[in-house]
Length: 299
Length: 276
Image 1 (cartoon, chains in turn brown, cyan):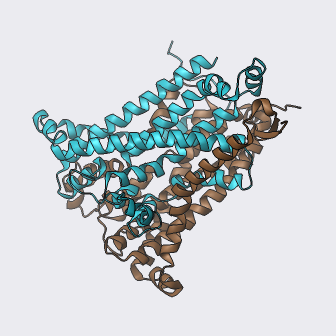
Image 2 (image 1 turned 90 degrees about the vertical axis):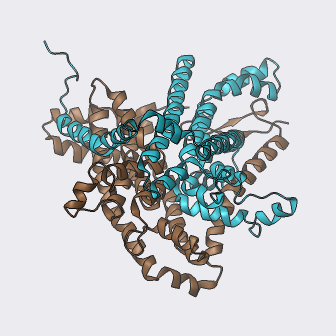
């Protein structure tokens, strides 16, 4: 049976395979079904459950749970934290990627390992380190308290813990992209008389814009959704230090299940938008890097 | 002559960007982490040892490591199937399914946690079929495992996909033309080539599971000695203002994750050595 099947290539295209390099039809069907059932059970069902539970008692209860004072203040706090955290980590990500990708220096891989550190640290520990520093029994806690500065159980603690957790996101997207793009274009701009800032705005930024946006979106999703680290430093003060994920926890633990899922559904919508943008941007960046990195292959 | 630490370049901004990177990295990441390690170093050794070997804590290590290992294994098996299908078989809706694989990354862990608890509860969508069979998921170690499987799913798929896409069809054609059956080609040709990626994905999923908190605490029920994971014990110690013991347990957890990280790096070094 000479069935031709398309197989995905690294460059993003598909190529034909023949009976010799693919499996019999029943194996393909079986494997596809196993994969889809597994994904459906582990991803699809939980996602649907969030919306089903949120709308369990109708739209009016749903809307009421969202316009509740505590829910609104949680939404405001989450947006505020994102407004502070995302720009700071974006500036850091661009700076770090510029230094690492455009220059050759000793200790580069060690620096990259350090930047990746927050990825491998449990969210709970990410929160804990700031309690150790600024908490009442911490290193600077008593001094800060004497001067009326509160970081732990206050908004600044949430900001610090979130900054830590989302620290690598933008840098991690930009470093490989900028390394693949090389330095020739920037060098040409410099030789032609562009200033450093002009080179960055006119040459580098247009080249990295999709990758940068991709990093920002991932950073934002994690910022708004972070739970473990924020939970340690926030103190769960209603209407003051509850972000949306913490509000979900508080409502759930009070057996206010519908309201908990209503707030959760907003976060789930955010994650769906993130996934959608992520796919679009991934496609955009692959369009941007491929011609330079792989060269034109005329097959 | 000074040792040259950086190659000359016509591009500007190295001093500024590197200075900012190092300052920010030190203030936000390195100094706070060092403070944690120092804090735990100020605890007398006897007290440190007692804190990290308390029966509650030991039970939590067993649960966390055991459930993480099982979850990562499940993900290795099914993740291979998912990655294979996504790379090799075009089917309608493939792009949507491909994008959905990242859902556990994108979804806030607290949301995943309550959603999983709702569907595996005895009256939940899946729980109602398991309950008559005597299978309890919510508030049992099985629930912890389900949550950790959810959270680790993208790691295996996302590390395997590029490895599968990079494979040369010619090698498989050669195997077929030399008379190998499709199964032989898979076992002897394809599988050995993707083992490093599979192990890396397994280790990444395992490492993530070790530190996971949000998606687990709801479904586990946090029963002492039974379903308390290690990150939860750290929080419990903190809530009792027992900073020293919280730091001690945190250092043990950190050491475990760094060992896994080291293993991943060695694995990648090893696979690069054999790739060329």
